[in-house]
Structure formats: structure tokens, C-alpha cells
Length: 185
Image (cartoon, rainbow, N blue to C red; front, top):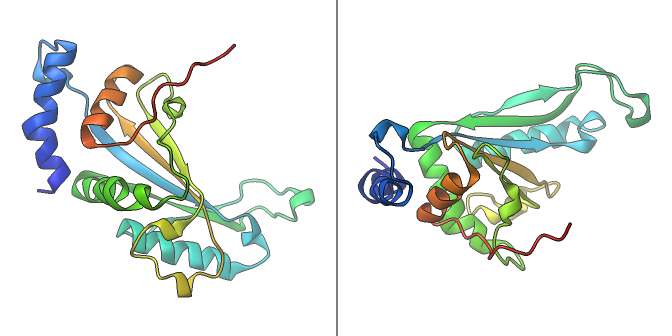
């Protein structure tokens, strides 16, 4: 059992029960999966960029990603249907908790000029999305083997019904959210 999984079972469940007054323990929200994706814009011109993205994502996630192919041909982007344009991986169970632990403890603190994650990354159903500008924030990546600095999207899918439940749960895990900014209409 990973460190964050044990933390969820011992402390976070109890904190959420107190905060939201759940009547049944099956109502407690949990993290269902984490999806990591990389889009390689110039992947249509150079196949080695897609191979590099797959290598980096395999190192980061600990599991081989699926290569995404173009669905349509777009002549302005010199893109044909079936070309490799990115990769993605879905993490569940212990691999998911291990990745989340490395993300919170190692990768996010290494981001330059980091002032906290924006709370605007939540959809209205309790899922959180964030992006990283470079894959080198993960300590597993060797900077000498990088051919091109590549960003990635990280989606954390929860079973929470509202954003407040998911935000509270992720804060308990240690996600560094920034103070709520006033949203002007």
C-alpha cells in the first residue's frame, strides 16, 4: 500500500466524513484515475519527437502509453488521418497513488515561479485538470536525453459530486492550491 493510499484510508476519509456529514461510507469521494497526455505538435513532421514523448511518459508514469493518431486530415497543419500526434496513459490503483505522490512532493515544487495551482482547474463535476510546461520537472527525466521540451496535461478524475468536495480531498492529499482569487465578471 502506498503512502497516499494509507493516508486516504486512515485520515482523509475521517476528515471528509466530518466536513460533509456523509451518512454512508460508500458516499465518500475517492480518486478513480489519473490521465496524463502529451500532444506533440510537430509529430507529423518528425516521428522521433513522438518516440521521445512516449519514452518520457513511460519513465514518468511507469507504464507504456497509448499513441494517439489524428482523426481527420487538416491541410493547413500538414496533417493526414492516421498520423501519430501524441500519447496518453491512464493510471489506476497503486500506480495512480505513486504518481500523485511524486507529483505533489517532487514535481510541483520544481516548477519555476510556482505560486500555487489555480482553483479554476475544476470542472463542475469534481474533476481537476492541470498542465505542466515541461517534462523535466520530474526527477526521473534525464535532461541530456531530451530532444524537445514538451508539456503535458494531467487530469485527476474523482467520484466527488461537487468541486468543493474534490478540492477539500485534494488539499488533504497536499495539493498546493493558491488562495481563491476574486473572479470579475
